Image (cartoon, rainbow, N blue to C red):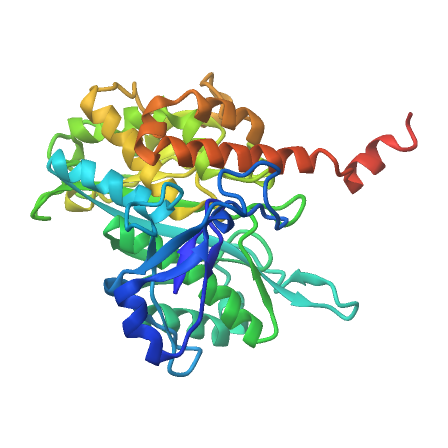
Length: 431
């Protein structure tokens, strides 16, 4: 039984199959304070839920049962957290996403979300240190061949669990891979992301390797993103509401179909993302380390701009249009809590539609070199924007926002107590 804390860490319990019926009927209780665990791990000095706080109940969603291929006779089930009286537990990430999806449904929309997840595969060297699995770069076939056993097991586990894997490739840096998962309803996609993270780490461990989804695990190298591909449909799922037959946007290398563009709703959705991007960054780039990814020159977003097939922007419009029209949000990284990241992104886009926010003209140029507002440079700065954003707070719930900010400020403060090797190299002998 799996639930996800505010940091995006999967937690839960394993039990004999004979206990499943009772767990489905009654749920399973946990001390509610563990929802606020820091990454150390530990508890905040003054948590919302302390030792006196009582229980929360993990209630299985039977539609989310997924076979675990690498463990015999085992399955996972994702859960929603409630209070003992069955009311919603206010720090439940999965319930926050459900709430946003309910709001979309009231407006007549159905969302679809696909994901590109990047991660780093490490192997032990003779000194027992964990180093990149290979020395290859983008789309290298040798990297696929050498890692074929692992890749097969990753893909097979995801397919067995009900996810459709579109492909796996070597990313730009040594040991870095990317798995693309086909779009699905947002709740299933978030569950799939959490299952994928567990599968990658578990299967890699069985092969004698280690997978990390740390946003930037090495200095001087590219970092691990988790790009979200989003679209809105009518409630029947028969019409992509971002699709347009108007030939209104040019692309650097062409588009398909040729006579296609982005609808007014799609533009306003982009406008909402840009309007709330500084606050979204706190949710989607949620660690101190995340801001070592959001730098120019490593194909990660820096400036708040959007563009057609432009990977220098925070929002990219892929060239596959028509019924495949979607918007790629490029800020989320591999440490992002997928429930909160997807929920906040959809809420921002919905605000754009409701208030007809104009995103401005898309850029065809290198956004790194243009005069746009910049993303926050640190986690602390991003949290200040999140604290001031009423739309995101109302979407996720004030309790989640307040405790998320407290957890992340605690993380930032703890980081400031540690002196890095770079600081030694830079300052020790000069001053």
